[in-house]
Length: 247
Ligand SMILES: O=C(CO)[C@@H](O)[C@H](O)COP(=O)(O)O
Ligand SMILES: [Fe+2]
Image (cartoon, rainbow, N blue to C red; front, side, top):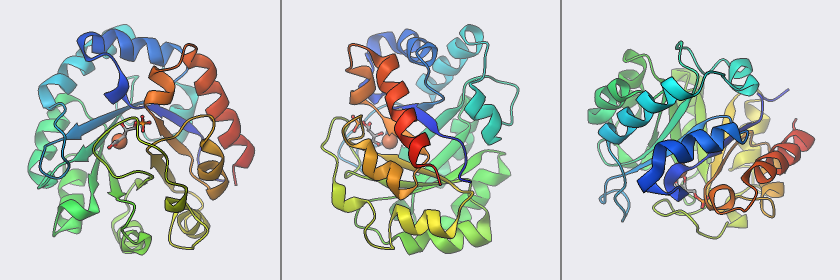
């Protein structure tokens, strides 16, 4: 059985002037974790937030959220005594030099891009040395099999398959980035039944079916959740579809 379904709203689509209250609101609506997109204007053509914003968010959430969602408890991802899991997606060059700062800021999972470093194994070892969970992300054009040795030999905690080119929220979902071939999410799920497989980009109630059917269990959704008039029902419907396809 695949790991629990986790719905991870991307705060990139939140109102940045009210980031903490937006994050608290979305967790109270039923989100399982927060997906935090860090962009450096080099790896991707956009610039978002750095460790000091993550640290402020951490402080606020630790004092305002008292319950860890059941799926996060069950997943075993959250090792700390804190309640809210910060899933940090780093779209930055030289990710390895930022691990310490994001650890200190309160990040739980450090997910870097395979394409952003010449030494993914070295980067994983640094992340593990700092006691963070490790995620490795691939852009749509990257072959999924580059992840196999990292999963098998380095014990990464999550694989992130991008369903749009990284850089911006609110883009259209690319169906061709999901399975059919054995090189995408289906291949990962068939090979690694217990792995947390995250998909990110253009996902919402009308596009979740393909990702769920392929075997993704961690669903990032930004505009579909934060832009909804009823975010709780969007979160619920995403969860229902993923649960229905769970392998
Ligand atoms: O990493 C990224 C974009 O690079 C994502 O996390 C997006 O922020 C998701 O937003 P939507 O596509 O769901 O609006
Ligand atoms: Fe992301």
